Length: 155
Image 1: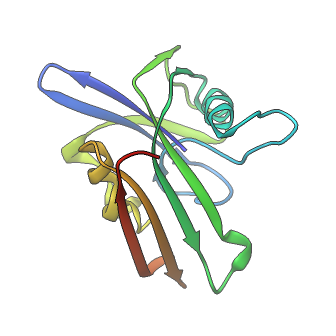
Image 2: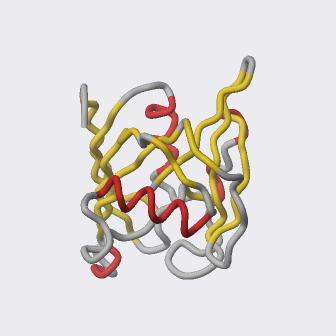
């Protein structure tokens, strides 16, 4: 998952995108997808490729800020490990696609009520410069049941 960051005079903005179909439909999130062994050499390639496919942006030098493990005991096929990247440099203007509709948000405007339940527990920390590895277990309704967050020096 990749989140674009833009620093303006006295404020920082992040680019989130509304998921228009499939897993996570109707939620604001970073852009991203699954590692493709045929096309990606590593997870950084995945972040770069998926950001291009989902919003038309070519990111430069993505910085990994978190690794999040998600567990859904009621629907095991949803279990996943997500590497979160920030991009501060890119080419092209974010565009809406069939998959996602991007929008810039100020840090005080992040729409947590319309995001995955876990985001409220880690996103502001990584925006403040912390690196984390976390485990989140969801109960039905995609509500956090258990969480463990570890702060790291590097990922």
